[in-house]
Amino acid sequence: MASPLPSPTDPPVTVAEAGAVTVLVCSSCRRTGDGPETPRPGTRLADALGAEACPGVSVRRVACLGNCTRGLSAAIYREGCWTYVFGGLDEGSSGDLREGARLFAGASDGFMPWRGRPEALKRGLIARVPPIDLLKDLP
Amino acid sequence: MASPLPSPTDPPVTVAEAGAVTVLVCSSCRRTGDGPETPRPGTRLADALGAEACPGVSVRRVACLGNCTRGLSAAIYREGCWTYVFGGLDEGSSGDLREGARLFAGASDGFMPWRGRPEALKRGLIARVPPIDLLKDLP
Image 1 (tube, rainbow over the protein chains, first blue to last red):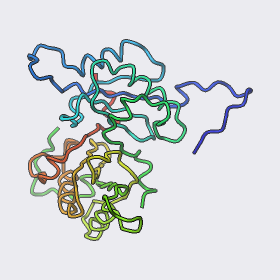
Image 2: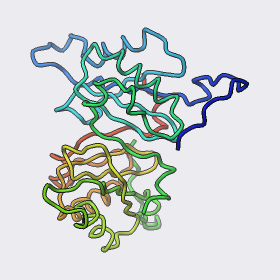
Image 3: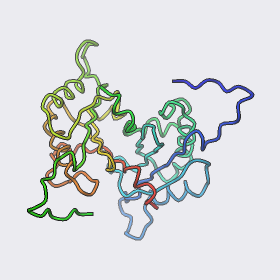
Image 4: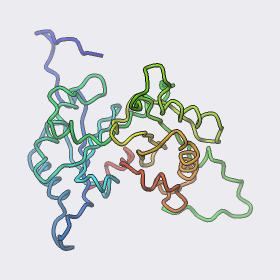
């Protein structure tokens, strides 16, 4: 369902109105050779993502998204929308996650747009799960 | 949070009380060489799973869980619990999914138990995402 083009007299749409998004970064994976005291890559990625505020986007760490062999992983969640899990990320992926979250926050159909989505979130898609509210409409 | 041991005078716990579970089978993947009229493997799997009733477990088809290169895929959902995505399934996986769903329905901590989980749902785990209610408690 495409959203209608805004009229010049429409009030500006804020991200908060469009839908707040949460990025869940997997903080469990450890690199081969890293000692127990070395900050885990997911922790570094979450810190980098959280350090640069993006309106309507919050960041959380989660212990194990279960995508261990294809990490580093993150999920992007928005209430009432599909949830996306991405793998193959690295400590420098904060910009890509931020851009994906920003795109998703502005979507009107519950899906993260493909057009404009960073390449890392296209080739790194691991899975997506539908929103609860959709279950009753499925065959 | 472990549930207390039942007392001999407690009424029997039904699966519905423990928590209804939904299995979402990806109906999009097509096998190489199959024509457009050939039923897709996910459709066959969903039909097989739905044909044998399991109390408290419902089955839905969903168009694309996004795990296309690691299909055949299914997700198992229970409200207030983690959602699990599995890949590498085949048309004969209905028994494994049914057993996983049954185990999950009886869990008291929001996780699908590892002990007793069918092998296909151990090695085939693709990802898991936490329940919405957990987000506020994450760092």
